[in-house]
Structures are given as C-alpha cells and as structure tokens.
Length: 56
Image (cartoon, rainbow, N blue to C red; front, top):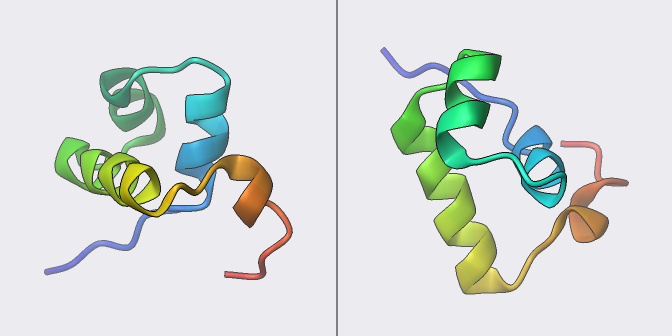
C-alpha cells in the first residue's frame, strides 16, 4: 500500500535546517520518501520558496 506524504512540507522543514531523519521521525513519514523529496528538489533546483504558494 502506498501512503501519501505531505511533500510540500518537506522543503520548508529542510529550509529550517531539519535533517532527513528528523523530518521523517517527527512527521511520521517514511525516511525513503523524505530522501526522495530531498533528491528531487536538489535535482530540479527547487526550494520551499518555489512551492509554498502551490495548491498541491
């Protein structure tokens, strides 16, 4: 079963200086999902400022 995560939340938490592990444990997200969001954001050059006003 696939569990949806709040991927938009991850870059904002990252910008606050939280680690992958802290985000995963603190927000009940699978660590591999948080890592995937970090990697995708790095690859695409996306930061929280680029997604904060998006609906989804």
